[in-house]
Length: 309
Image 1 (cartoon, one colour):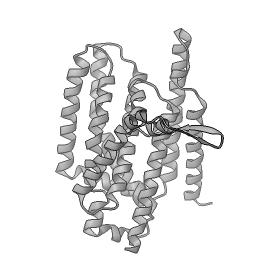
Image 2: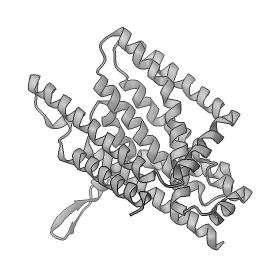
Image 3: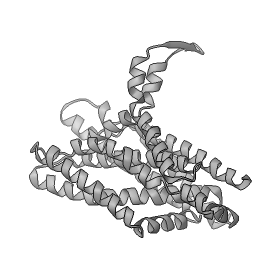
Image 4: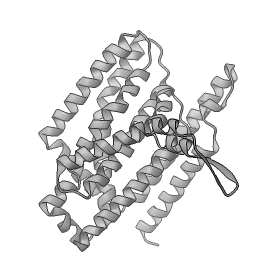
C-alpha cells in the first residue's frame, strides 16, 4: 500500500472511532442531579471532546495526501486578498460586539448563551456571502473547466472549496474569543458550555457553507447564488414551525411514523439551540455531519456535470 492509501485508511479508522465514541456515551442531559450529575457531565463533555478530536484527526489524515488542502489554502488566501472579505468580517464583528454588549454585559451574567443564540440568524446572511463566489465565479470566468482538465478530482475540488470557506468562517469567529476573556473577568463562566456553543457555531456554519457551495455550483451569477442560498437556509431555519402544525401519522412496516416530527427534525436551528445551552448530543452532531456530507455529495455531482457541458 502507498502512503496515500495508508493515510486514507487511518483517517477512516479514526473518523469511525470518533463517531462511535460520540454515539456510545450519553450526553449531559442523560444524567441526574447533584454532585454525581456534575461529575457525569464533566466525563461526558471530556468524552465528547475526545470524539471530536478523533473526527478531526481522521479528516486530516484522510486529506493529507490529496490536493484538497492546496485548493483550500488557495481559497483562503483569495478571501484575505479581497477587500470585501475585510468589510464583511468587520461588519460581522461590529454586530456581534453590539449583541455582546447589550445581551451579555447588560445582563451582568458570565455566560455567552444570548450571543450564540443571535449568531444563528447572523449566519443566515453571512454564509451565503462567503460561498456565493466559490464555484459560480469559477464557472463564469471559465477557470472551473480549466481545473477539471488538470490531475485533480471533483471530490478534491469540492472539499478544497468547502474547507477554504469554512476556514475563513472560523477565522471570523476567532476574534470573538475576546468575549470569553471579558466574561471570565466578570464572573466564573462554564467553559464546557462555551465550548459547546462554539462547536455549535462551527457545525451550523459547516452546514450552511455546504448548502451555499452546492447552490453556487449551478449558477454563474454570484448575486443569484447568494439569494438562493439565503432562501434555502431560511427555509431550513423555519421548517420546524411547519412540522409543529402537521400531526399526520402513517404506518410503515408495523411502525407509526409522525410526519410532523420528521419535518421538525429537519430544522437546523432546533438542533443548534441545544449547543448554546451547553448540551452536546450525538443526534445533533450526526444531523449536521450527515447533511454536510449530503450537500457535498450533490456538489461533487454538479461539478462532475460541468465536464459534459
